[in-house]
Amino acid sequence: MAKVKTLADLRKMSEDLKTKIQLREKGDNPESMIQLKVSMATCGIASGAKEVMDFFIEELDKQNIDAVVTQTGCMGYCFAEPTIEITLPGQDPIVYGFVNELKAKEIIEKYVKNGEMVEGIIPTNYQTPDNQ
Image 1 (cartoon, rainbow, N blue to C red):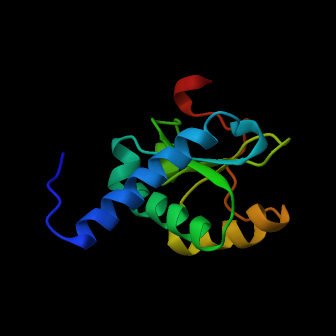
Image 2: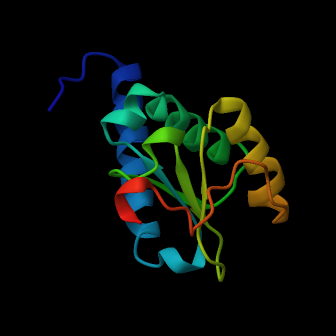
């Protein structure tokens, strides 16, 4: 555990713990919430998935949108990294590819808030040469 040297260190530690507790509590009933999974396999990380995930976490929190943001392994869409899967309550998951911060903002504004589809959906019936 890190040593607390200043009041700012204590506040930071407190905020980090609150965030972890909130995520754990939200995880008890995820189907009633917006779920966002960011593919964080090697190809996703190399393509900027970590920055995209951080953006989603910060932006959803800033806009007070109740969502669970988690990371996942490879979704099999290496050609389209960074990829994210979004599940709105009561709906089937949708996978978006080539997501950067600008695309992430558009996804929040249009799809998450209004249910309006955004360009960049990877079709669920997409076949790679390996799985045909």
